[in-house]
Length: 278
Image (cartoon, rainbow, N blue to C red):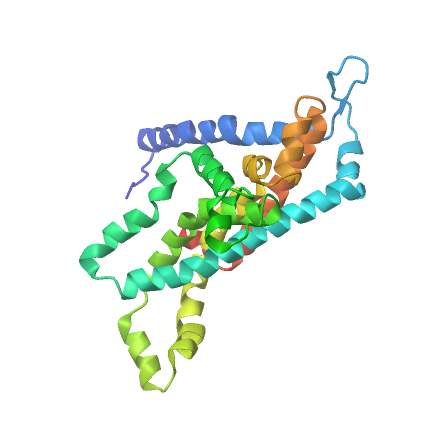
């Protein structure tokens, strides 16, 4: 604990806090402010340079053009689907590790579960592209058919990429549940499903919400996976990537919309206590 005294002691503590605060403003808040400011600029048709005169054209285009409305809706749908799948997989895996695996082996099992995070992002995406390739992929050979390249491939690949980010907080949440609480539920006549629904799920809810922050945000901003396994599909990140060199203000507007969505999502998760579990 740091005790802030008077005079010189207080000045020293203030000086120590000023450095990280300045770093936060210069490295994070200032660029973010410039991003939002650029969204209200335009591009000179003759020179291609950014015209800093205030305009709402880019924002209006985002919310009135059906193509961009569909892109935003598809992106939110993919992020929600990936988050749901990650939660559906992470909960039983975490329960198994926390309750069935011997205590001495749990660190090893957790390390194995997060091993995919050590591999290159591009290597993993290309691996899924190879597996999902129609006609020659492992998925078609093993299951007799492949979904090919499209939204199903995007959701499957992103789920694989971000699943460890959901497993870790959920595992921690389950590990904190006292064994006596589960025994009490069984003594009162509750079955396994009733115990999970009425006891376990409410307790690990904030942990699941904390994991969803990672899976949702990472899926929302992804564009490389869509390019490699999405076929002709597009997400918000692809629009930003494609517009960056030709229309920087519009790219900033689309990126700013992503930031606004995540801010709203974080505020919602904060009400569920998710931020306390990060």
